[in-house]
Length: 178
Image (cartoon, rainbow, N blue to C red; front, side):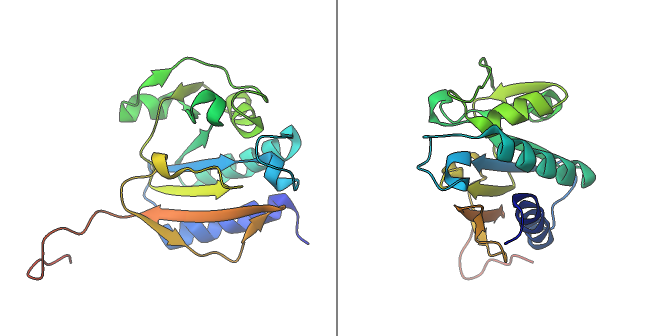
């Protein structure tokens, strides 16, 4: 079995290949470390896999000129931890909280500690998403989400789901899209 680090790196690279992101776009990630270690979501978070996953994703997004947005747990209303630069560039609404392992979750805590200038946004509209452990990131994706199938189905013991977004097709039978 490959390591969590290898699983998330492989999955992220496959997602980026499928999504063909442009510089400045946003990847939103929800991550239950409880699910990763085979427990019920929200029951026994673990900072070690959170640090590992955050580190890999932060490196991979920065390499591509993308922003990483990390979803908090429901105790912080699934607010998003991100770099202040991203919040200001897109005009997201800032909210006040500092995530910790029991309110925000281990992954959001790792992000808050790992970003250069972290802040929380109420919500974002991301271009791509990774949901590790059924954390329900859909509210933070742009309106038309498209599933992306990767070779990675689980991160540790947690289900993993990947998405990209696209503009909505509008019009009717006479509309042209390309």
